Length: 62
Image (cartoon, rainbow, N blue to C red):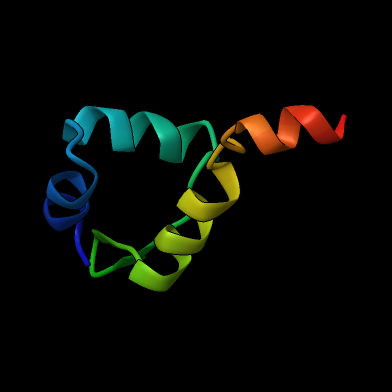
């Protein structure tokens, strides 16, 4: 997907994605001067950043 598609997918401004690329928070690659992103890698990155939801059961186990 390109940067416009990624911005729509993540519901973010394109500038945020450019900032994340510069900060190396996300990875992408350029093809003919156009940034491209692998949706599977983006989904894995999102999943890895997902905070653990605390439930009553989790709190009782601690």
